[in-house]
Image: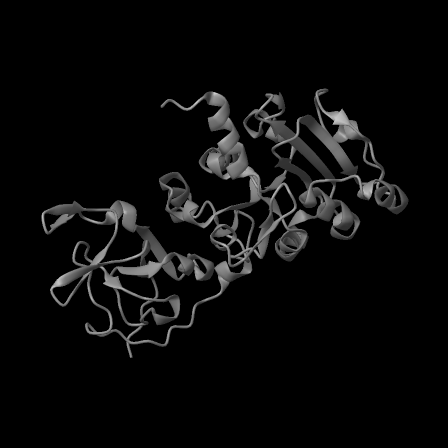
Length: 328
């Protein structure tokens, strides 16, 4: 049976409607306080509501015409006075905007804008159609079904961004290429505490969806400058080589040997400790694994370890090389 366009759109919209918990936004965005200073921020974050770009906060003494060079934006011209912010604060639905407006004065933010798009009616402004030259930083929780396109849009427009995404976006070829080439990376908090459904139900961290979501960004994060202290020494018994790719298996980031110069497969959680000065990313198992046959069945896309006459299929692995190998 052919599914109707309406049913397909309804399913996609339902799958995309997970709203971010305020505390998760606070915990992450507050880490970039200094980088938000003097910046024009856009939050294209309400995907089920239709409205054009709206200016909801601007620094006192800055005219709206100085923020935008075109006339399509609905300028609310809110001054930065504390009294006016508090008066309009409860009317702000988007939690990203609510957090930014609440902290705009303390953070020295120049302006905060928001946009929305309703896919069921086609009203509002899509993130693909925004004139990003009017903004410095984009902060949002985009629809996961369009995550590849969202990241491509940020890169095409050379925008700084901070966005929640599915953890498996790491394995998307387009996204992984950006990660491997140091054009984007993970934020500080890999796991969110949960999400809120449209009916108010909270999906806690132990649910499969929130547990698989994290922050991606190209704003500077401190861990990318921290050298990982390695304490383990290599041995063939402790670090077996994959059957279908010439690299050793490293079960955890803390188990990376300090004295191994070759290729290593590490869990994707390694990215939260990745210092590009210390390590080089060479690829990901989905694209590096060499296909082979097990009991007449052709397998590919993952690394395998040979164990007791059979083969163990590994989870996704990132292949790295230690640039600063030392021997003791």
